[in-house]
Image (cartoon, rainbow, N blue to C red; front, side, top):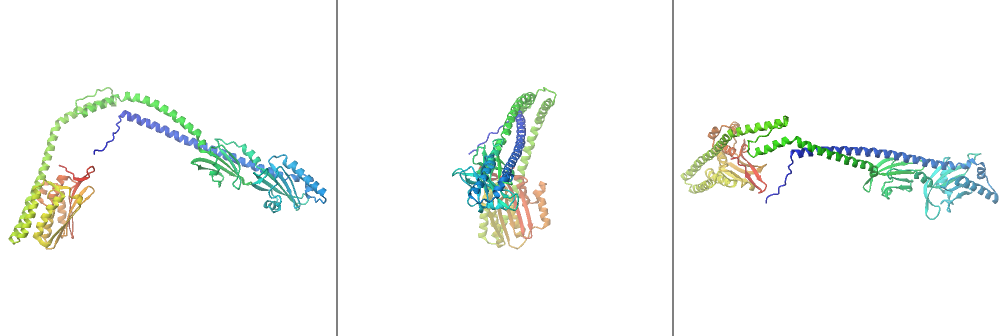
Length: 608
């Protein structure tokens, strides 16, 4: 099945130039607009954060001043000597007791509550009685047990006024009302060590609400006032998320920070009042803060694109006029590609493009003359080199057969003379298989068939040397179908027998292995012989790489012969690699491979 080919988009020079300049301008405008948007939005956000922080801090100051006014209100009895005397007096008769109660409560009504609507209840508490004026049907919750209340004991123990944090109490019905209180110890004006009692003022948060209502947050923000019990005293939320405060962690620190609530970014400003413990929290949506910057970015990008489109139109007209002579040259070059070297370009300008046209005309004329003179010569040289390489290969192959046949027939002759007819018959059968394999193959055969030829040869030699010779084939299955030159391994095995079995009586073991590594077929013929002396090994390696072809052919029909055949067939990446030591000699035959991905097979890379 043929694979699908994707159609490549080919653009001409003019289109590429226009696209490049357009992309550059668009990228530049987008980068400038984006970074300008980031800078503007950051400046606007920081300015809003600073302004908001100042606003809530000023709001906190106003709330503290409001609470200080309530503190000062608790000093009112000290400005009325009659009231102080009444509080210090000790009436005996019921009439005196009633008169004292009316006098004090009238004072509380006129002085303490009338000027302020947020004051709900005022109490003067002594050890003997409670004097009060209330605007609610309910008294304070610890009315009957005020002496045991913590705030009462704290007020008696200090000269400073105390603040009772906002808490819920019944005031106008079953629904509980948020109330905060201030209390102060009353002492006799004649004797400061004499404590008369405690004055306590209960107020709702309408005073705080009136202060917070005056706060105007830009960009639809939200403002919350929270007491120490994490209860909301005041809330104004112009944001879309009505549950914003419940999603926000209440354990916030003073200052500003950003957070994400329901996947939306918010800017939060917080300030805490030291006296009352109230926290004022202002929240802004980051999207609302940067909405104007985004709108400005959109307008900037829109206007920039209009300018870019107009400039591209003007630039296209300019390029079309400027590049017209160049396109004429390109059309002529396309004609030259078809083989027509007689084409000439008219010279319309005296600038660089005119020089290019003149050079093109000269080049085509010279090229035509050179090609006409050299084409026939190049063809002849190529054919001569090709025939020379083929003749060299054929000559190398033909030299192997007489040498091998001489050794084999000599072995069979010795067996017959020794009366070993059975072994001689086996030798003749192996020789027959070997010769039949050579005659039935061309100059390249699969590795599997080459190994069969080598096995026949080694069997012949094993009959000659007996137990002194053994061999082992360790061939990987994926290497068996790879094509190699015929009789590439037999000379290597023959060389091993010649230099090991004939030179020594020590048993010789030959191992032939094959493996594929990094797109190469490696066939290794190793023996356990005495090795090659260092001087001879160096001369042999030098002979492999020697460029004098006649010397190589005369030097050996063994290793050098095989090495030259591989180089002629597969190029310089192929050949023999020889290593030797006292424990034996290893000759590796290297053949480059091509891996066919479509058919999943291995094949040798032919150079001929």
